[in-house]
Image (tube, rainbow, N blue to C red; front, side, top):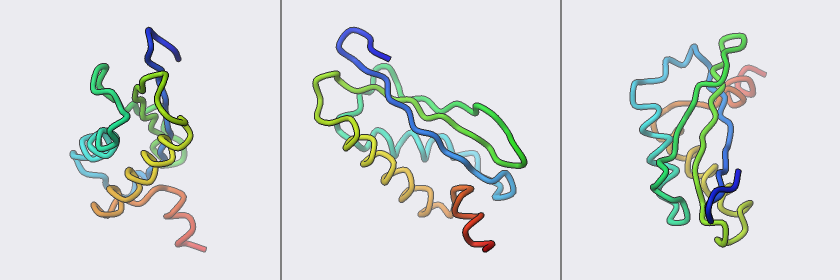
Length: 103
């Protein structure tokens, strides 16, 4: 959504509940997001648990950009790659990765 020169962007994460994510999960994700210099620190990025389905925890990660920044798709891609890298570094697989390993 658009608000006074800022635009809210979100990305979704699916984490398998069986992976026993640690208490630092939200900090890991938020710190990954704010590493991108295009992300505004006010309002602060947030992570919301939006639903739980079949042991899958569905999160929405919200963050804000200046509406005049570079292509939002590029920023979103960079943020997604940073989140994925950070989660892997902390041994927290995404639910889809867990499913792929089972096959």
